[in-house]
Length: 319
Length: 260
View 1 (spheres, one colour):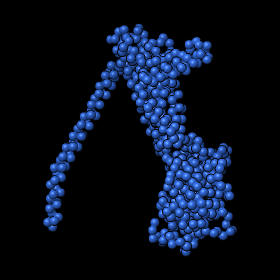
View 2 (tube, rainbow over the protein chains, first blue to last red; view 1 turned 45 degrees about the vertical axis):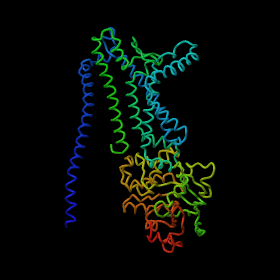
View 3 (cartoon, each protein chain N blue to C red; view 1 turned 60 degrees about the vertical axis):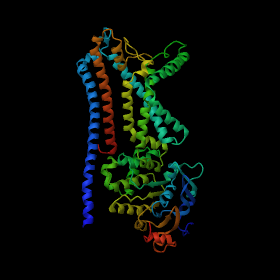
């Protein structure tokens, strides 16, 4: 009896202090992480609040559908909006096929231990870490001065058509920048396709290509779409890569061909905030433009989330 | 261990000679020599990790999907070497179908699941596909349950129905041999009974090789039984003999539940 009673007393005595200490730890952690979250939220709220309060009143059909006027102190952002959308569309057309094909090769065909696979993988992750201004310089050197000027020499007798900053070169430069996003997202999606399904297909006498095309890729579509939309929202916001490769400060007309320059929302914000002859007159326009860019990226990200969950439900056979 | 002599009236479908499987440097299966009789059910039994699934998967070249896996030896389907030079595993797998342990229907409609093998095989005629889908579902004893909802997603079926769908899918391409890797191990007793009755029915037209953990099941469904232990084929004989008078003591120990 006493043998049992003694340890029981111990059990009750020590842990109380320890429990208190443990609880103190819990509380400290909860308070500090709560504070950290609060700081983030407050900063976000201040930025968004400021932009919304000052920018919302600018938003009107006129703002969306007219060009800047009076030295950018009046008018709207239509050319920049149009240029951004056009550039992003072109970029998507370039980046999705290349990115998906790369990921399919890496995940479905390449032997995981070969030096080629490893090199490509290292290249992809390094690509993701390259500062965006470097992409801009690369685009200028490679697309504009090498590919573009080369095309001019071959097709236009040296006359300058393609060998200058243009919508096409900006879109391709941006595609190179967003390539890792699409590759990584697609590979992730491919990895999530159960081995069972591949085996089922192969056991029915399907070739590797049939299995990838008919079973694996359809399963991976939500992931690929998510990657695409993330790439789009990144591409819509970046300015540095297009700085030397196609964006213009101001254009009286919209781009009419792939070798024209274009205006861009992100660059327009930079221009409005640094190059305006009348800062006070430009400010409301600036707020409006920032709000539009924020809404654009926010909507795109939201679309990624919605598309992903929709497709996932459909694949699971629930919807 | 060599194959047991099989009485002559039974035609051999698969002739396996010194089939050896390695995973990297590790040997997963010691040389196996065995003849699998046509339109019979052969059960592969043995404790987990004994090499029976490895053996099964090397009969339709599914093992080579594992990067580290190497196969040595000879497997002949009606005298044709399936590991021979210039033999396409895709063609081998069309003639030797497979049903897996976990039912793995595609997240497509019931109809499209069964039609898949036909479509990839280059059959585009709609009425032919429809006819063969119906026949395969009928063979798998699933037609009556699903004929009203062929366009529903296959993932909405019960576990037992999904497994029968997978069997129908394998049958639709009209293979000659059907390999089954523990097809009923994830199913409830009623669904298991369905599958067992089905195997019995299928053995009229197909050569069936089934891996099972369940010895009663092996005794119920198979004509022949091969006992594997520690990556080796220990004994192969008529199921009746294996279960009543096995020639090896290891077999007897396993059958009577002394280990495994």
